[in-house]
Length: 150
Image 1: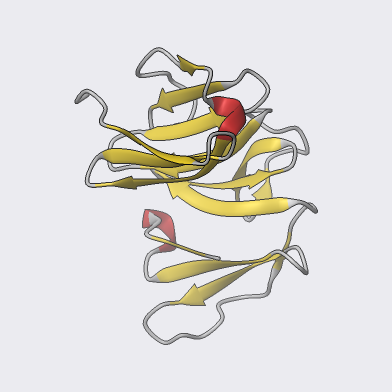
Image 2: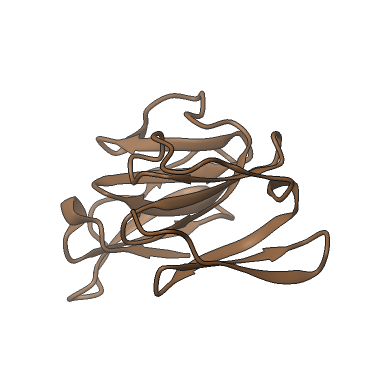
């Protein structure tokens, strides 16, 4: 899994090695590994950026990566199973609450009321041209959400 575009990690990509629970930083221009691998807690399923922060998504929820280490063992958003980041906001599926949340790029501040009844079935999500697309695992459908502008 690759993650790119973080302003503080300019010209670098992040590669998550799930099998070995490590994060590798790659210089995108040269393709060289930068520094050593960063050991991660087991169960990390996704690495992504929002604003100027790198986040880890895993079995316990969402955690922030600061100074090369997860900030704590406690996730900042328990229950979050899937995240999609767009240009001005992010979307998070909360399986525990069965809700889909639209939040600011700090991944804390709500920018809209949650959509109830869709979080438990969220599969993969992606923001394309400002539109959220997500797979509903329960219904076997792909759902399109065109949000109001911020």
